[in-house]
Each structure stands twice: as structure tokens, then as C-alpha cells.
Image 1 (tube, one colour):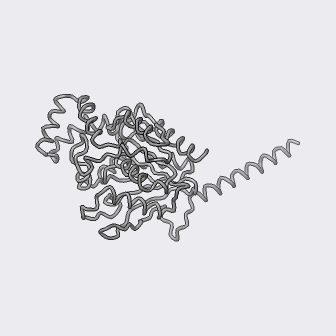
Image 2 (tube, rainbow, N blue to C red):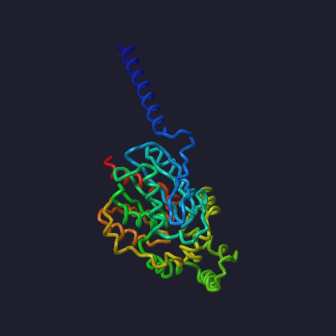
Image 3 (cartoon, rainbow, N blue to C red):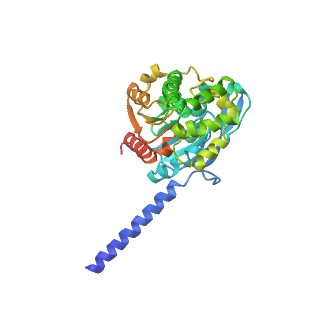
Length: 334
């Protein structure tokens, strides 16, 4: 009897190992003629010609395909690399992606390309290229990526399963007001006065500007980790400053570029796909505004990160990732 029981358990063990190997094998098997670790340069049609954007695929899951939209504008996918371990453990299929103009993608010089509407069409072409549709397509956008995600949903939500907006309000003027009335007042008055003086002179290349901002603003509201992750440092090193300044503006207090008047708050009611709004206590974006947005969309949820800032996926990682994963699984009926 004991021998039979041992034999049965041994067979069960072998079977489970075989199934696990089969699952892992299928997860990392893509129908590509050449293995390139999931990296593809996807051609994108624009009014100024065809260019290529960098993407990297992780996993094989026909039920869940997540496209990560980085911030900036014109940062890189690199600071979002922290999703790799979390999403792969869950068996999610997801895509890192450098938007046009960012470091790993083509960088055309025509400044007319840097418009939100054109970026929306770019995302739609990427969606088509990765074979995602309304049954499995999730967008997770952080900061500017959140703007892009909301704008995409307003035009193409018929092609989506769900939207995740990470640390981005729906109104640039409201963000500017929060920066002036809340964030600036939290800063040492002498430090703030010196920062304002530099901004008034438009002397943004002055090394002193960043010397003041990094400890007094960035480490308080962008990423609160004492030592910034290598992925974030690489992303900052590779950022395309010209596009960032054109769209965001040179100042870190609010938005003064092409996005200065961007405001879709009154249109959030049009978004009907399941939507997760993510806010954080120390964020550059008002967490109360993020909570309000979760109530303005038709099918919204709110995730609050009590220890997080603008990059809560790093400095409040456990709460952030658990919340994101739980939302995706709930939408997927798990």
C-alpha cells in the first residue's frame, strides 16, 4: 500500500513538473522567425512619414495584454522595468514601449509631431501590431502616459478591456494650481525663492536649478527612495529634453508647454471601460483629485499609496503592485 502511494505521488509530481515546464515554455514562445528577446521595432505612420518605435514583449497570454505608457513626454520605458518581475509572476503578457521621439525609438526632428492627437494614433497602431483587442487590451499609463491613456480611451475605448491611470490628473490647470498652492508651500521659503528667481530669468540650464530641485522637490515628490533605482537613472539620462520642454515646459511646477491648457475632466464621464485611478500621498498630483476621477468615469476604482510619490511603483511598491494586479485579475474575472 505504501509503495503504491509513493508511486502515485511520484507520478503526480512528474505530471505537475511536466505541466509547469509546458506552461513556462508556452509563456516565452512567440511566433517570431528570429528570437530577439521579444524586442520589435514597430513601423508607425505619421503625417510626416513612417518611423519605428521600440517595443519589448514579455509573455504569451491571449487573455491579458498590457501596454505600458511611460511619462515625460519623451522619457523611456526603462523606469517602468519594475513591472517585469511582478507581471511575469502573474503570467500577464505585457509590453514595454518607447514612444516616438524617445531614446530607443526613432527621433524625428519635425516638432509638429509632438501633439497628443498624433500620439493617440501611434498607440492605436501599436495596439494593432501586438494583436490586442477589446477582449484583452489593457493600458497602464504613468504621468504623461496617463494623459495619453485617457486620451486614447476617449477615442478608442471600443478596442480596450481596461485602463489604468497612474499618478496623473485630468486637468493641467488644476495640476498647476496644486503645485502652486500646496507643493510650493511645503518647500523651504528660501529655497523656493531661489528656484522662482531662476525660473523668472528662464535660466533653466543653470546647474543650481537642479541642485535645488533634486533634494527639495524630486526626492520629496517624484521618487522618495534614498537611492534612486538604476532603471530610473537610465531613463532620466536618456530623456529627450527638447520634446519634454516643448510639451511639458521647462518648469517643474505645473505645465507650461503645449499641454498647459489640457483639460478633459468634464469628459471623464464618457469613459466606460473599467478604470483604475492611482494616487499617492506625496505625489506631484493631488491624490484627492485622482480619487475624484475614479468617481467621474463610469466604472472606476481608486488605489491610494500612502507612502508613495509620483513614481509610487517604486517607493510604495508593495501596495501599488498588489493593487494593480488585483484590479487586472478582477477585470479578467479571476
